[in-house]
Image 1 (tube, rainbow, N blue to C red):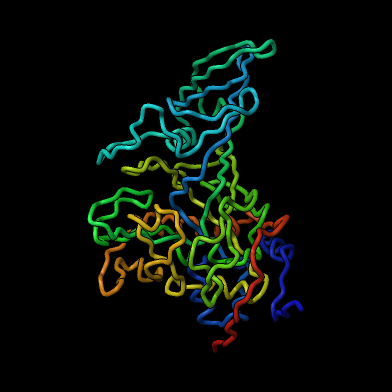
Image 2 (cartoon, one colour; image 1 turned 180 degrees about the vertical axis):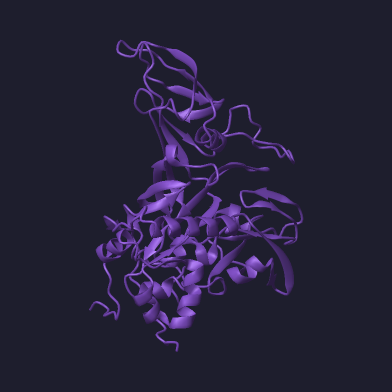
Length: 404
């Protein structure tokens, strides 16, 4: 039997209010206070859209480029962009460059403190910035594609298509990393000091998109989003999407990685304010991606989800010196909440540990506010998903206490 709601809105009704300039749009931060003041039902009646945001390293990212036909024509096979290898086994002049790709001469198994590594993420950022990129390509040659090699300069204006296509973005939740060993280790979660000398984490917590719609009731295939400073879309569930059978909080938020999304968008709309390359000592290269997702408040259950606070969201703590690299299923050392993580210190087994974010809450807030303004100005309408992402049925108890 379907749950009966006191508030029932449709996508069409909310979009009409957006077109008329009458929609009430707030950020996920603001929604917390609204629900605390009004209660969940009145908040659902009052608010039409809640905006979210995140800005963090998302290694599973990359770009499809179509660099335009050469004269004579060429079917590019071995391809380099500023010396970084790209994948060319597609069509004649289509290629894909992964954010984590490194040049062949890069000594990636050694640690050079302070060394600056250059890779696919830097190529992507420089393209978005409008900088020139050296394309070098080789081919075996055919009757219809006779050219065998080329070197030329390309940029965002000269390529026919530049499409950011990220297989796994926006993890619903993520690990807190510590190091229980006696030596410093270098990981994609940053430098971890020995004997749990620090802890790193990567999530916008209460602003994070997928934590505000934990069962993917409004986020799905075809959802229009803020991506890298422009408009993008959710193309499919992301790789490693695994929302089933996970432990959840009372508001439905998973306490581990859980869901992910695959995103696409036009790089020609994007900005380096929200797409940035990163060189991580001892690990390699990653891409910081800014994503914002609007959540239509269709009913009080969705309003309830979007009122989640950092102190209510738990993340698992793992030892990155042994438990994480082993690949074995192990229990977390502990669970900690994002309220404590953001304060800069957590306590595990009586030990106080300094925390450091690898994602930017400041930028997440900026993204949520930009998306809020786009919607209020009528520049951005919400979209009904063509299909929901795989997810379990909601099983949470809504707190209906109303405020006076």
